[in-house]
Amino acid sequence: MKDGLTPYVLALGLSVGLLAAGVLAEGPWRWASWLWMAWVVAALDHFMQRPGAQPTGRVARYLPAALGLLHFPLLAGAVWSIAQGGWWLTVAVFVLASGLFFGQIMNSTAHELIHARTRWERAIGRWIYVTLLYGHQTTAHPLIHHVHAATPLDTNTSRYDESWWRFSIRAWRDSFRRGLALEKRRRVQRGDAPWSVRNPYWQYILGPFACMALAYGTLGPAGLAAYLAVGSMASLLLLMTDYVLHYGLRRRRRGDRWEPVGPKHSWNAPHEISGLLTLQGARHSDHHANPQRPYNELELDAGSMPMLPYALPVMVTLAFWPWYWRRMMNPRVHAVQGRHRDEDVSVPPRFTDAVDGVAA
Image (spheres, rainbow, N blue to C red):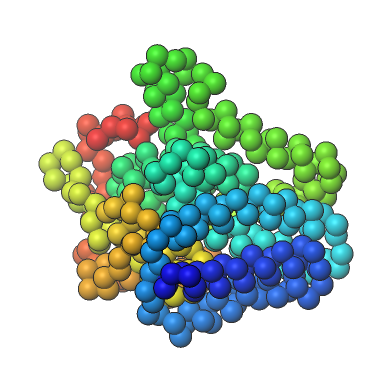
């Protein structure tokens, strides 16, 4: 096995194995899966903040695709297991464990895959998002977020002083709406009707309903509730990750344009274990500078890139308390780019009609 790949295989393999054990054996394994995802990873991150060598070669190249293919049987198994019921506390713990697994690991896997070079890899990433109730991320992330990150035009850039509670509603709603407008416009530009069968929003909308129908048809109301619980938590964690990684950072205007996206426009984290589980999702500055660069080639420079005070999963948890979050993060925003001013975050007149995310 190539040097640098072993830590990924061990960390991801343990996560997959514990979730699968919770599905098949239930009992203590459900608790073990939750303890690993919620507590052990955070504890290890506290002591392991120096990422090791990154893998190279064909195996590393296809690791996200292999992990992505495991998503579908694992999701079906988790929904089935939760729907079987049991002691309410054990069921609740496994819902949390499953939500953390799919919200952290599989969302990161889908993110890596929708940036991949080949159509089949992008299709796997798209259907991971669809089954997690966030299919429109496949359009909104590369075509809106990457174009407008750290500006008021981006639906998934959290604003200075904005709580995640308000952000999550705004980001989901606006990314869906603007992504739909963008896809309809693209269809028209290619000579199709706005709602042509080629519009991927058919998949984004009908796909989750098909999954809900399958869960209900095979497992009844308990299956539907289990699927919605896991999918909703996974979507929530995706939104919270976006909230954390861009909180308060803004590109400044240069005339009627925004400055190029740079290292100072995303938050980053060096922690090793969560980096392995999220395919280096917290090396976010380099990802925005080089969207096609694979996970194993992303770079981290503490001297030029803003750093989060704790590992990404811990920061996501802390975002639940807005008063503490502001106390912790607002001074860091000021240190990175100076105290916020209204003129830095307002939208120039030529941008006001950019509702579809393709202007500017």
